[in-house]
Length: 165
Length: 329
Image (cartoon, rainbow over all chains, first blue to last red; front, side, top):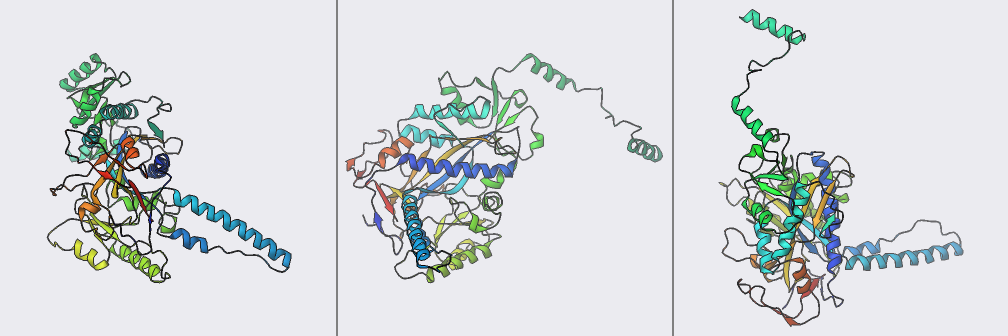
C-alpha cells in the first residue's frame, strides 16, 4: 500500500513497538492543560458537574520544524581570545548535542491535537464500541466511575481507571 | 390613587415601608403539599431526573456494589440531580438544591465556532498571541467573522513554504472546513486553496450554515494504515476559581475511531479516507472502533498476523495486517 504524504516526507516504521502509555500520557497532558485553562472561562459554579467527550488526533512529527529549529543555534559572547573561542566552541557543541538529544526525544513523542470538545451524550456509541470489542463490563465500569465523579463527592484518588487532571 | 402610589414609592425608597409581596402569607396549597411530600420522602442517595434514557441503562444495568445508590424520578422537584441532554437555557430556573450536568457558559468551548475564541483568551500563554498557543492547538477560525484572519494565516504559511529550501519539509497548509454546529463530521471538506474555501462556504446562498476552518493534521498516526482519532472522556466535578479547586478526571476507557480506507494525503476528497466517523447523510458505515486495550493490541508493530473477527454479530470484516502502525513523518 503506497502512502503519499508531504513533499519531503518519508515513511517510517517504528520497530520498537507502539508505546501506548506514552500516547496516553500525551493525551493526559493535553486534557489537563485544556480543562485547567477552560476553568477560567467558567469559574466557580458548585451547582454543576459535567462530562465531555474530546476528539483528539495524534500527529507524528511536526512537519520538519525540528530541523529548522535546530539550525537556529546562535550564541552571543566575545571571542577575544583563542581560549575563550575554544571554550565557546566546546559549549556550542555541548548545547548542540543536548538539543539534538531533545529533538530526538521529542520526535518520538506523540503529538496529540485537539479537534473538538463535545457536550455529554454519546454513551450509546461507547456502549456499542465496548460491545463490539467484547468489553461491556468495562463500559459499565465506566458508567460507575462517571456516576462517582458526577453524583458524589467521594475521593477518587485511588481509582485506577481515572487520571486526575 | 396616583398620589398614594407615588407616596408608597417614596416611602419604600426611604426604607419606611418594607417591600412585602401582596400574596405574602397566602401560600399556594399545592406548593405546601409538595413541600410536605418532600419532607416525608427524604431522598435516599442520588435521585436523578433525566431526559436521557442511556443514563438510566448504565446505572441500573451495573450490578457493581461500588455504584452509588441511584434512583430516578419523573418529578424534577423530587430530584437531587438533573441529567439533561436538552440544553439548559437559563440557569436561574434551576432550583438551588439541584446539581445539573451542564455548566453555564460551556457553550464557549463545546461550540466549534466559539472554541477558538475561548482558547485564544484562556489557553494561550499571552491571550491573543498565536505564537504562545499550546502545542495541542490547531489553528482554527470562525469563517463567519474571521475569514480575514484565516486568509492571513494561510498566506503566512504559504510565504514560509515559498521561502523554504528545496528538499526541506513544508508546513501543512491544508484546512478542514466544518459546519459550526455540525456533528458527525457533517459538512466537512478538506481545502488547500483560499478559493476552494470561499467557494465551499458560499456555494449555497440560501443556506444559513456557518463554518469554521481548522488546520488539517497531514501526518496523522495510522493504525493498520488508516487514519484514526480518539474520543476521550473527561469527567468534571468542579472547575473552581483556582487551580487547587479544579477537580477533573480523564477516563482511561476511551475509544479509537478508524477510517474506512487506507490513508493517502492525496486522496482526502474521499471521505472514507479522511473521515473517521460517517456523516448522518451518508450511507457509509462507520469504520472499525477500538477500545484502548484493543487499540493497543492492533497497533503492535512489526507483527504480521490475522486479526480475529471482532464480534460474530457485527459486520466488521477481518483484516490482514502487514504493518499495523505506520508513521508518516
